[in-house]
Length: 442
Image (cartoon, rainbow, N blue to C red; front, side):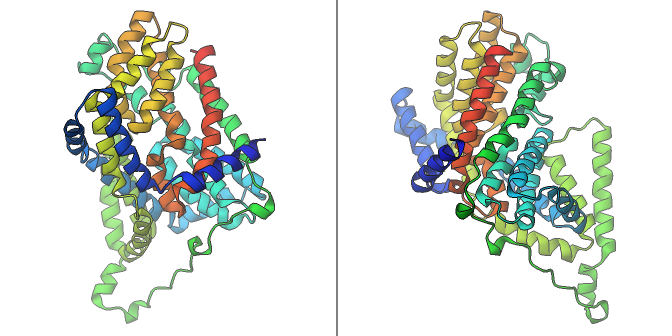
């Protein structure tokens, strides 16, 4: 039954789902029209909201692209490639490969969403090259699984934001108190939900495997090519000797790693900037020479094709959702029909819908916190449960939100329609598990 359901959604997505860029364009006009109809805004106002927001993700766009290319280059180093080969060697059959990929993706996503996306994409490529007969689109879909629980993990925006409040507007909403991670990320309820996802989602992916005659293996052009041996040092020009100098890489990476160690010793946290610094410096060190690094970088940059312009499109969509009041209206409607017993479930569902149009954990919390927190206080719902209901809702619909899949797809060399059918099945299953948990555990 699961396989039939996966085939059904895959056929639908292959036929009707447009390219991720066109999908973002269509979503732009859907939100624009919704703002005019539902919020009584003029077309001119909606266009202004869109234009004002379109570059709001510029910093994040560069951070995400750097995470993609520096992580890719790091994974291309001999040491990391050997580690990936060692782990991928555990899987001997296509079924084992799918299960292993899903578990690795979920664990890496829980540790850090940015690292998880890159590591999972590269791990999928490695497994596909080692295990014959594995269905590559399903394998890549499994690699995207980490985004299901990232918001309940160590890099979760909402649990980290509510854990530290410095007299800001969030602190005022929380009555001057903070919510420690022991009550969010490391609470028994949240850990139970994550465990259920980690235990069941790999099985669902395994059940979606197609028959052997319907398997699509990794395209030949994506397989690793033999690296040309460098010229002998005696044949190099002075400039080429400098480009192939290990001393240059050692000095620069040493300086960067020295900074990173000091940053964490001073209380710094792992974020996109620090993650990119680590990827950059360790990659430079392990690639040994600037020339090696630049060769790998040129290959990595090709994986960013087609995704660059989608970041500003989604920033514009977010601008319209927030400024028009659409995001607030969605949240308020769900809250209005909630009781103390159903509050977390309806908050989870509202967060899932808002995430589809505001695919940013921090941006979504900024919109929903002023509505969710006072409502939870009024109904007597613990604030840690209210916050994590938003966090799980935000993570849940990532499965059918192309935005976060872009870096992974860039590495894997696939399009969004190749994996979305499988991701839709996981959306349904994870929604059932998380929704039930909202009722029973929260």
